Length: 229
Image 1 (cartoon, rainbow, N blue to C red):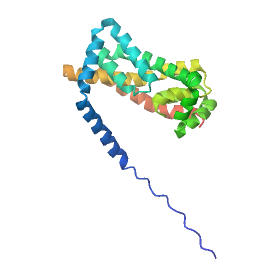
Image 2 (image 1 turned 180 degrees about the vertical axis):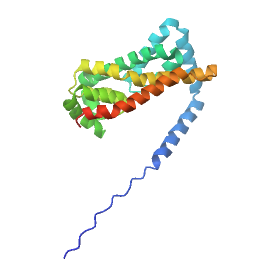
Image 3 (image 1 turned 180 degrees about the horizontal axis):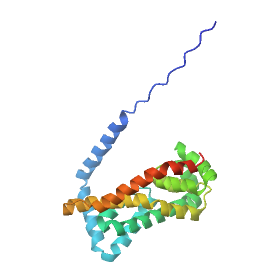
Image 4 (image 1 turned 90 degrees about the vertical axis):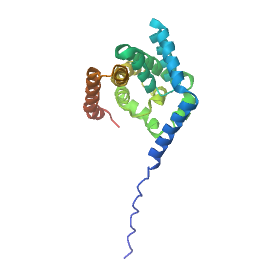
């Protein structure tokens, strides 16, 4: 009787380097902040935006749009909007900035730099499946991708331009479904800023943030059932 070959047990992947890399990145960022005086530069930018008066939100929205098109980490800009303008105005500024930027990136990916975008996002395995997911689910995949971080946001806008989703459904559902996350980021930054400057906890804002996070957690399983993978 021939001996049965023992199935090779897959070795567990060692991901020890991930937290180490994170610490290195944080340390590098703090070092760069000291060397290049980033704190002073950010404070100068904040003072400049505030000095513009009613035009401040408009200018910040344009900067926000440019940041989304440039595929920068826009969460930082949402935090900045909360600190600069408070929750209500900050949410409006962030929602307009991120939606217009996402729409422009979509159009660039579809009409102006299709080959370049395909070469960049095609390296990510999930991006390769995005067109299939969109073909099967239509706007549902846009809704899910905007409510939950399925894919990196800064490239997702360009990647949707390569799919068969139509522009207006993409624009509408992106605008609507990015609102909860924007409120969480902006209100969180506003609550933190007020806590530092006024020395008291903004329980109303904390309640709104907690409620939205709970709502998203409850919605997640139901929405994922709507999607055909």
